[in-house]
Image 1 (spheres, rainbow, N blue to C red):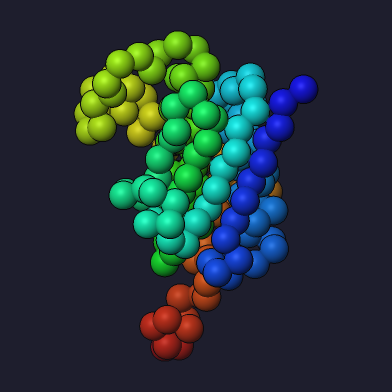
Image 2 (image 1 turned 90 degrees about the horizontal axis):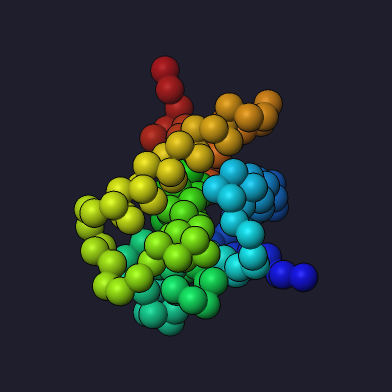
Length: 148
């Protein structure tokens, strides 16, 4: 039996409803990619502590995904999750061999395209799916002031 786990830094302040939505999205991705085995996903607030230099990373052969979530909208976090989950699927299928080009190329292009596709398909797949597009920390009227 395999384990699938999601860890989200408490410092990000994500409300429980967004955490549950993220979990549903991850299960949707695992089913639709498809991913056969287990994995761990960390949504973190400190890149240096987790040794990532961009917004996300997949640790090949370890089945670990780390996504930087600080000051990012939920949909952007989930797009990064889907991108890295695509790399996990590629790893399971033996596609990740040797040095992988980190910008452009077949591997990255597939991960970018799949991530966008999974976001749209999830949003359309359920009544509350479009909630992934909502701001994670506060609504726009709190940021910009009341709309007149």
